[in-house]
Amino acid sequence: MKLDSMYQDVILDHYKHPHGRGLRDGDAEAHHTNPTCGDEITLRVRYDGETIQDVSYEGQGCSISQASASVLNELLVGKELPEARRIQDTFLELMQSKGQIEQADIDVMEDVLEDAVAFAGVSKYPARVKCALLSWMAWKDATAQVFSEKERGAA
Amino acid sequence: MTSTLPGLLDTEAIRKDFPILDRVVHDGAKLVYLDNAATSQKPTQVLDALADYYERHNANVHRGVHVLAEEATALYESARDKVAEFINAPSRDEVVFTKNASESLNLVANMLGWADEPYRVERGTEIVITEMEHHSNIVPWQLLAQRTGAELKWFGLTDGGRLDVSGVDELITERTKVVALTLVSNIMGTINPLEPIIRRAQEVGALVVVDASQAAPHMPLDVQDLQADFVAFTGHKMCGPTGIGVLWGRQELLEDLPPFLGGGEMIETVTMHSSTYAPAPHKFEAGTPPVAQAVGLGVAVDYLSAIGMDRIWQHEHALTEYAVRRLREIPDLRIIGPDSAEDRGATISFTLGDIHPHDVGQVLDEQGIAVRVGHHCARPVCLRYGIPATTRASFYLYNTPAEVDALADGLEHVRNFFA
Image (cartoon, rainbow over all chains, first blue to last red):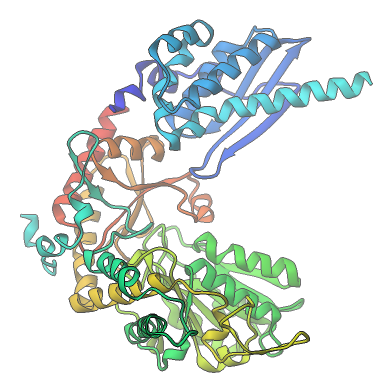
């Protein structure tokens, strides 16, 4: 198990040059923390119908948590909600794979996950999986707020 | 060069007692274990004692008349004798076995919540703690304050990582029922000056609870010198097994204060209406205790005493001086806490530029160097110094100057990796 498999260049690039960082206007906000290590993220989502207009975020944390938020922004902005959910589910599956996933399956996932597939190596480190998932859980939470409010508004 | 540090122990001999220190991790990296503030490693003497207990003497204690029951009881109670001697307790009956320091501290908080006057914590009274406590010496007092309506107050910290005791007379008042504080910070290594605090507490009749979890393993601990009312510590940080902790309390307090957990072992007689309780310490040891773990702790105490707590302290002090010097040479490294070896233990927290401690810890781990990263269950300290987390290296009797060098070199590698 070599460290290079976790700290892929793609991840280090996103960490050093994050996409879409900073908080902008949004329809809902979620603040998530990883109590074991002190990683924090505040994330906002803005929707136009079911289209993701923006995901903005601010936080502090390790390279994995910060790079993951950057990748999330890059992947999800502009997507329709069902497609975004499919990406999130696939990312979750990858992160929960404990490093046991076959290369062939990773190749299939890469079509969906693009840069996010670089996190495959992180799944071997149980202590770091939470870091990688932090922003994705915040996104899921913020999105749920938006659509539950819309449902309530419609009812 | 470094092997000539004054005061070092014969680590070559000591390390033979700790087979785990010979482990090689990650395909060829020699383990450098610097996470002793989290838990220490265990010498073969302790491991053998655990096996011997289960192989030859295992039985429940304080009941049964058969040979094994008597042997197990004698072993368990002799562990109490050893611990009492180790901390210079006036009486063996002042040593209560718990499962860890957290349980010890929770036990005191609950005693005081249920106590009669003059000890009772209730609305209109105050609890005083400090900003550098481990969560286990914060949360039990928060719970007690919430449940009773008492007010929770605390000592703040100076920029240099010391307790700010300048306001001691205003903080500890006639309303204060209990002052709970750590002897040595688990995150910064700071050794606190307890004397002025205890003197003030005694003036107003408040009880003093000392968390000695980071002190008992590393320095001579004399509860009579300390003058506190309760002292809590845990076995697994001092070469003992997990699952065994200690609460020392002054005998008259243990006699006066009510039990918390009820059950077997802690009673004298039981009817369907009410019960009377066994004398301390058994009053506070409901249920089958961690017998093997207590036996293991007794052997750990023997092990440490044979080397000598004074010599262990000198060894760690020499290592700390050297480590502080080496760490201060690293660019962008900021020590959180005292940045000298004065009045501090061998636990050193730091940040390294903008590199998150998780990343520092991970890249060190790849080199075989085990440190702790995060807020170390002392999040208020991180908030106080405006940092999300720290990397913490903590040393013990088996660590060497070469391991300090490995840490310093490892941190250089971390800097290059994220440059």
